[in-house]
Structure formats: C-alpha cells, structure tokens
Length: 326
Ligand code: BTN
Image 1 (cartoon, helix red, strand yellow):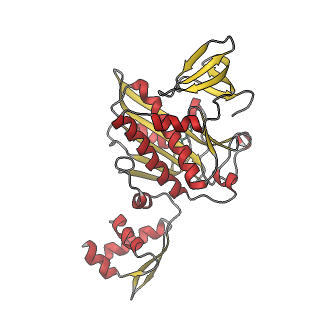
Image 2 (cartoon, helix red, strand yellow; image 1 turned 135 degrees about the vertical axis):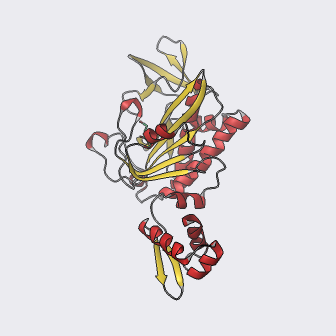
Image 3 (cartoon, helix red, strand yellow; image 1 turned 120 degrees about the vertical axis):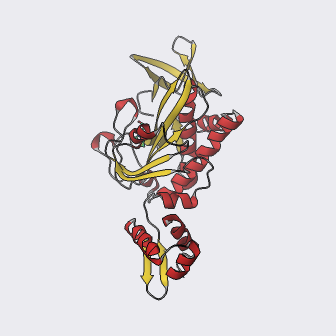
C-alpha cells in the first residue's frame, strides 16, 4: 500500500492529493493512508499535509528504499523483491542466510554495513548513506564453473553504469574491480553454492563508493569515491537503477542467448590491464606476465617471462599492475 500511495504522490509531485481521493482510489481507510504517509515521512520524504487539501510530495528521500527503487525500476527479474536495511553486518552474509528459500533476483540493500566483506577475507568500508552496498541472489541454470562469469557481468554493468551516470572514465581492473583515475571505486564479491556442478545460488555483492568523503588512512592511496573524483555528489538512486538494468540486460544475454559478447566487449574496451605488464598472485605464487587478451569466456591470456602463454580464470587469481595497485 505504501508503494501505491507513493506512486500517487509521485504522479502529482508538487501538487496536493486529497486523503479522501486516495482512500477511494486505493480502497482503504483514510487512517491507513495517514499511517503510511507518516511512515514515508520517517523514511525521509518531505510531504506537506493540510487538512483541507491533503498531501503534497515536495522531496523524495535520499535513501535507497524499496519503494523508491521500484518506482523507477523496469527490470523483469532483478529486484522484483527488495529487502532493505538501514544497517546490517553484510548484505552478502544476509543473502547467504536466506538464499535457499529466496526467489531468484532478490535484491538486498543496506544504507550501511558494519562488517562489509571484501575479497580474500578483507573488510569492505561501508559507511552509512554514502555508497551502494547491495547483493543479488541469482539462481541461473549454469555450471558451478561458470559462476565467475556473473562477476564479470556485474563488473561490466557497474563500469557502464558509472560511465553513464557520472561521465567519469571508469575502467575494469580484470576481473572485477572498477577504478577511476587509478583508484578503486567499486568491488564485487561473488559467493556461490551448488552440488554436482550445478549452481544452487549465487550471491553477487556489489559495493560502490558513491559519495564517500573520508576513507580510513590505510585505504586513502587505493580507494576513492565517485563524488571525490567528480567534485560533486552523485545520485545513488539513479546509479543503482542504471546498474540493475544493465546487469539484467547482460545477464539475460548470457542466460537466454548464451552470449557474453557484450560483457566481454566492455571488459576489453575498458580494461586497465590489457597490453600491460602485470603481476599475478596465484595462491603462493607471484608471476610476472604481460596481459594479452580477455577471451570470450572471460579468461585472461598472458605471456609469461619465458615466452609461454597461459590462461587464467577470474576466480583463481588476483592481478596487480607492475608495482602499483592498478
Ligand atoms: C572487493 O574486495 O573488491 C569486493 C567488495 C564487495 C563489497 C560488497 S558491498 C555489498 C556486498 N556485501 C558485502 O559484505 N560485500 C559486498
């Protein structure tokens, strides 16, 4: 009901909508309307109320509430169900807890994470209201070994969404970091479970530093936010919507049309590693190589120092520039 009330207010943004009109149209009591209006106000909506004229929406909330996202979301599968938190330990951890019973496409999003998780057991700095901290639960009919492709689909979508919405030149550090001006703005952590090779579910966690102002000392050299690089705040909602639409577009191309062409085209065009000397961290091994190509399966083809060529899958390695993070 809250969502339907909000839709009505949105359609007439800036104008008054009468309580009576709403109660007739939505077939509920005026008290019910009033209750939901108060709930919306608590979520940060600025709604003017007068006894005679009714309700008038002046400003929407800055928060990434399900109502706000749904109003603008045109996806078929992703984000049909949205679970929202003001604060949580980690959206990925929560996703794992509910994954088996959750429906495909469920989106979990939180204003802050107290124990945001990064790759390789690292923490992910997730301050309140400053980023997009979200996880998608996906249940595609694919093999476990193909799971890493979803990470690359997410990276391609994040890179393009950042480019579209901010105009910043975002690049992908293969396979799944997004960087702007040489520093990381977005990371992706995919966790999966399956049996006999078949995926039961994937949790694709995406963290974007959108309006983060201050990073902890240890991250300052490596991390930045879109707002810092752009010099002005970036609308999280527009970015989240754009990201979900692109994610779904590339995801459905893969699942329904069996092609990763678009994803890989983006991964190649905006790659920070192709044509460059890199260092690959593979378990205990540190391998110096030259990045040659990202193939249609998303593998990185490199030339080793002895001239041999080798393919790496995105799940098994971490890549560094020659002596630098990028
Ligand atoms: C990385 O190390 O680059 C991956 C970072 C992934 C962070 C996101 S934020 C939303 C989701 N929940 C988590 O706990 N982590 C991911």
